[in-house]
Image (cartoon, rainbow over all chains, first blue to last red; front, side, top):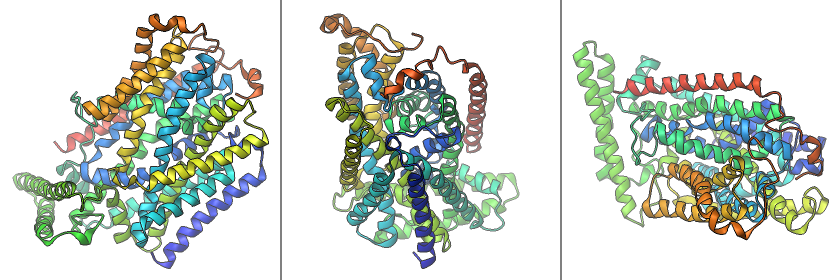
Length: 559
Length: 48
């Protein structure tokens, strides 16, 4: 990076940090470490989006779209419905009970064991996911600056940890506003630069048509096939359940919207997320498609992670084909007769497909060679573009953008992990108030502990495949079960704690078996888990109902 | 749970009077979703 890039990067990060610290010193109340109830609907909405959109989103998603097109957007199609359901069902209950964590509700509805199980499942997966959100920006810095990945992981992890330790929940929410601004600015400028780098006689609609020819605009799959990773149905059903679970029961999100000034402000925040998330995600993926068009005119590297480590035997035919693809695209654009346009369009399609085949073949060969395999290069596609083609100054802004995204997610995650450990385990076991000075000190200690755990996982995250999928797979392994417990709490009056506990444990086993044994696409796991808990609960209840006389004393829907 | 939980316990799905204005938000969201799927359909058809 040039000195101007460093200036932009350090300047923007310094400003955000200074603002965060200033905002804490202005209102340094003890409660703010756990939760602040002072945000408007807009702030809540931005905070929700900034927490979900981690560095992984901005690094991995454009690369995924470059390789596979817009199909990943279907993953988010269930989100608006999930927001409505949460706004109607979960939010009023959380507000009524005035909880710190979502899992507190489970104790009043069932018992302490069910609450502990849900909190434990959350801690396990969110701790690992936090590791991935630390790993992503470390990866960029190590690539950009040639640093060792191990040390970069440790360095970036420490920075995020120090930042979270300093301010807790309030600092997280305040700084997320600025971070989100840097993120949006970075995305828009990167897209603008990409577009203006296309040949001058190419219009936006030419670029769109060309990407469509290469199959990159394939955004909707309507056929119902169990094996499709992304389709309207996996998005609506699997993705819908995942979003319901993530936003409704994952403390890193619950903590965000419980920070609203009132129930209405929190609702507004959820609605804001429902309206903006889909277009934002389409825009991020669109950046990947635009990058594909850009690389039609600029020979792309065969391997984006290690462009120099490609053998000539692979590189030469790849570059020859890339040249042919470019010439065909130019001829297609210049053709005036419909039959020429059609013929050249078909040839472009074939050429694009041959290029992909070469890329997949090399990737597969690397996969089978354990020594050469260091994971797919999808996560590096966007950052390679940033480093190779963006002008001085903009590179610093984009690196800053990725850092902002990482900080906003990781700090919210660490804050939620610490709050859950403090409220659902420490305060509950010791009988202390989570707002006391000793508990607050413990909260900081838990943040530190979870930070170290996440950094530890970040060190081995390099083999997790496409990051954005890895983090969602991890979530899907437990989200279904957690959501199932909450659905049982919200919608059933007769289910008793022992039945739910037994059903949840059984369901978690089933989900793990389905993923690792049967290997069904991961999005379905969310639906299976969510439905299996209440269903199995009803089935086993007659056998174990005598074990407990506990009856529900807090609200189910409509009670 | 916070000690003053009882003070705000009148806010529940049943007692919140403000549910109805939100129906407009939900309806607008449904229309928005349909329009978004329409755009995805257009993009998909472009390549076929």
